[in-house]
Image (cartoon, rainbow, N blue to C red):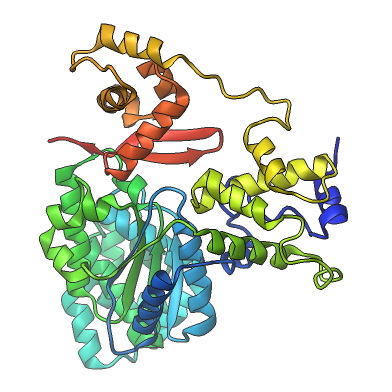
Length: 469
């Protein structure tokens, strides 16, 4: 079996293949290394500069900031880039990455954020914060008392690292006897979770002067399959956090364009929240050819062996026309470009390809350099005929008509599916259409905010976003 990593080191002077084959860098011990490799347009750079000024200011508040982009545009990468930038450069802010909020209820929001606080800060540090909180200014104590009296009453128990008190804080199930032992009235639940969260964040802020910045990923997946009524309620909970908070907390949330323009947009479902956050966003863009060229150079430079870093051209083993071809094939979508680059480099190493040019890129993209059979295609005319036989919609006579027909079939199939989700391959079989055609149609529905198209280990999975109520 070929040792690809060894061949890549020998042929290209790289520690390993720097381009993540999945298109997403690993969230592990090397994630900071990958996160720093970020290329942006001048327009995005200006928006980021504005965002950082808000975060660096102790006086100005920034409750929410949205990172907007279609699938594969680098939203997770951006959140990780921000996390490590904040840690290195902003002394009075601490960034906590939240992979996903599992449900849209206030208690689920609370649990996801509390879990990130405990995992990152650790219980001993939290207990030490409460020790200092015993000496908080009376005006601050009064704010916390008015928000959530039970939390204020338990400060001494948290300071003493009381196990039962911490079980209460993470919203664990509590018996009546447990509540009596703690001398509190209620557990943390859907009715009071928002107040408990804000009160805790105020304690952290006014005790150690640290603003918590939550970096929330995959919000689309949290909202997938929810009714417009439920999503509107979720937005209202977010608005409540905005109204109750001051400088102690900021949220940077990765979302699709549908949050601003689709059927589940904040503007349509929660005008009150939209009025507070309407200018606080960054739209991530496709990479230009120059940006992709620079991104490739940065990946190669980061993973080039120090002993040869100065000996090679920054793009080696790629030629400029190879990168231009990658851009043409992927349209400048960052994830797609990284996936293709990773595949090209692996195959180049297997074939002892010293120089990777545009012709080799084309061969890899077309499947000519591997033993893998090209993706099965089907006769569009036959598919249209099947659609005609089954359609209750106007007869589809062209490929454009078929795409519109497919939209309805896809939506109906997902509504009937368990959990409102199917793998893309299963969906293609259900709607009896070519995989590639279903993929392109799902991408369109994703942009329109109707479905969520998400990469999985074996391809794609599609979720219905909104049930019409």
